[in-house]
Image 1 (cartoon, rainbow, N blue to C red):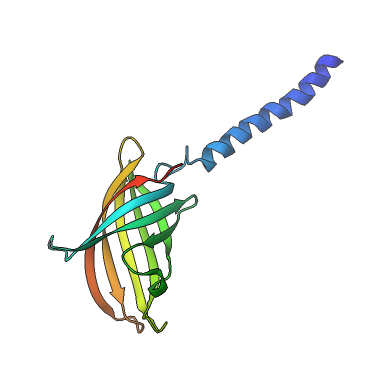
Image 2 (cartoon, one colour):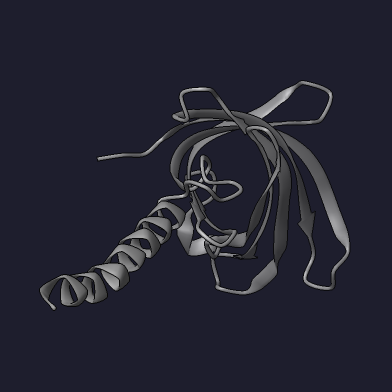
Length: 161
């Protein structure tokens, strides 16, 4: 009688423990595509004219969240003149990932001046704590006309406690 009771209690507990392990692995990015990119990264962004001539360089923080969303904030433009970048990311191959995000821009009188879309790829190194990549930066007027295209080289390290 006791053996049947113990077995009837243990079977669901074993299943629950297995499910909990799978959920915890997924939440931490293990066993999912793109798990090694997931997290917050300290980035150094270098803008070029796409011919290799540096325009400027600045720091950025980029968060790649579970489920494929991106939130970005950078030191290249005062925060009063732009919204945070918001977008998406996905695993492509091996340790490589594609991303795309957009932010809106304003002038000092808080007048909407357009938006910028950044699209690129990044590769996480074998330690999982550094990445490098490149991107295309497209700047649009409020009416949707493309004003400028520049390139960006990116390099970053994982932001941790």
